[in-house]
Structures are given as C-alpha cells and as structure tokens.
Image 1: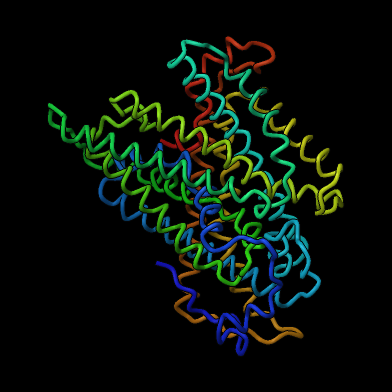
Image 2: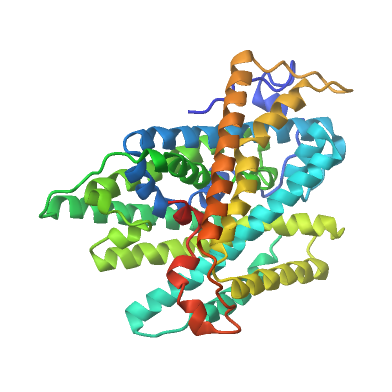
Length: 458
C-alpha cells in the first residue's frame, strides 16, 4: 500500500545501515512492532463504531473511500516520518530529545510562525480528544455497572474517578517509558473488533427476516467521507512515537504494519455489520449487536482501549506544554505539577461541557490538517531546501502529483468536518448545565454527548 520509494539523500540513503549511523539511536527504544502498536492504538478507536453507518450511507463506494482514507493517512504518515529523519540529520542541535517534534518539522520547513501554528493546532486537537475520551470512558463505565450490577454511578462522578486515577500514569516521560500501554491499547481494540465480527457473523447465519439495503444517499456521501478521513487521523502523535524508536529510519515499516491492521479491522467490522442488519444500522454499531454478552465484552474492551489511548494521545500535548514553560525532559517535580494541572483542566472541561463532542467537530479540523495536508506539504518543501547539508534528491513528479491530490482531498475533508460541526452546533443550541450544577440535567443528554464528533456528522 505504501512505499518509501523517494530517496532521502543522494549518497546517504543507499542503504538503511549507512543512514542509521547518522541518526541518534535510542537506548531501550521502541522496536518496529511496538511502534506499530502505538500507532494502531492512537489511530484506531471509536471511529470503528460509526464506520458501518457510513458504509450504509455511501454504499459500495464507501469501501473504496475507506481505502482512499487509509492510503492518504498512511502515505502522509510515512512522509512525516521521512521529514523527521531529514530534519534530525540536518540539524545536529536536535540530536538530543525534542519535546515537540512535529512543530520542529514545521519550523524547519516554513519557519517559526508555522512551527507555532502547528504546535497550537496539535495541542487543540489532542486536548479535545482527551476530553472526549474521558467522557466516553466515563459513560461506558456508568452503562456497564448499571447493566451488570444494577449499580448506578453517574458518569459525572466517573469523570473525577477516572481522571484523577490516571494522573500518576501521565507523569511517565514518553512512549518508550510506557510500552505496555501501547500494547494494551492496540490489543483491546483489535479484540473488540474480533468480538463484534463474531457477533455479526452469528447474526447473519441466524437471522429470520430478509435484510433491507437502501440505495446510497448522495447527500450523506461527503459526511461519510469525512467520518472515514477522521477515523484514520492521529498522525499528530507519530513524530513523538518515531523519536522513541531504536531505529527511527524504519518508521515506514511500522506504518505498513499498523495501517494494514487498522484497515483490516475497519473493513471487516463495517462489511459484516452492514451485511448483518443492512439499513437498520444505528450510528453506534454496538447497538445492533443482539447478543448482550457480545456487546458488553466489546464495550469493556473499547473502554479499556480509550483509557490507555488517552495516556498515549495526551503525551505529545504534555511535552509540548513543558517545552513552552521550559520544563526539562528529565523526570522532576515540575513535570508532575505541569501534567497534573493539565489533567485537572481536562477533567474540569469534561465536567463543565458534557456535550463537548459537538464542539469537537470544529477541533477535529485541526487534526485533519495535521494528518492529510501538512505532511506532504512539509516533505516537498524540506526536500527542495538548500543549505550546508547534502542536497536531497528531487521529489519525483508522480509523488508531487499524488501529494497535491492528497492535499486537495484533505482540504475538502477539513471543510466538510468544519461545516458539519457548525451545522451540529446550530442544531443543538439547548443549554446543558455542567455536572457540578446539575448531574440529573447533564445525564439527560449522556447518550448524545459523549460520542465522538463522527457520530454527529451522520
């Protein structure tokens, strides 16, 4: 699906062994598969719950659009990895640990202002994702305890319990310091997909009535594509992960493994879910699983995934803020104070705006830019730059054309996401009081408030 056919330099890219000597190696760093686990955990997630409905709206063309979205995200992820490799080789002052590598790439390509913009957009996106992950996990915990033990504890309380309990884990420095979290995050979402697939296969073979399949809805096609594009976003965290690799120049191999796995998970759940119930698909595909224990196990696994993905996804945010306040990358009390403060702010926002997911529609436009537009843009620019370093081979014409097409595609996706967000906000002007003012009132919208913005686009 993806190739690294464009050489990185005239002489130094003849083989990976030669290149690896020029890039600082990370002791106790991530290997190719550990890196792939982190990438799967950060990209795959709640999008899998809404993709089947997107297929329902788009029809067979939806499968093609899903492949396009996967290719676009994976190709951009590889280009971003190549950018980081080139930047580290050119600028020796980056031999040490860099707390905001994506912004460093942007600065190297287009200057300080672009670096600041990318850092700001990345932080906004990751902060928004963190708030919604806390909300989704809390609602799932409320739902599971109520169904299994008839124990009703409001998600407003779970926000406090979950958020505060995760604070010590957030003190860990970078991905190489919590490898197990990446493995758990990826494994749980993979197992959840297997459970859902088994449930849908069972329903296909035991259904008693004919499944109804409605024709594609052209008016929903752009929204379906937006859902698919967002479901493959998450590359904003890739430079932070790549930086912790033992062999950063092998990042493209991790991208191959991760995106092949993610696409397989997404396509199987989407196809089997659609074949199982057809146009009766709910926005959250878990609601279409008739066998309760299948649904509950999948929900438990997704909740575990969200908890550990929260730690992984917020790590680049924490490091970026630490750089802003000149806090050392080494462990110390300043790091603990900074990250604890940020987690408290995340908890406060989750308690204050329980329907925050409708606002995330706008926040997600930042993620779309950083995933589908910026990497190719930066790569073409960095390869064309001249200075006191070995000149890069020119980017082949077919790669330039492909990059321009992906930039246009990403721009259209960002516009669609923004339009959907504005439309959703206008359509849901009902004021929902914060949890600390009225828990009962907040719970009246719990089933609508904690799904990711992708639910709202449909």
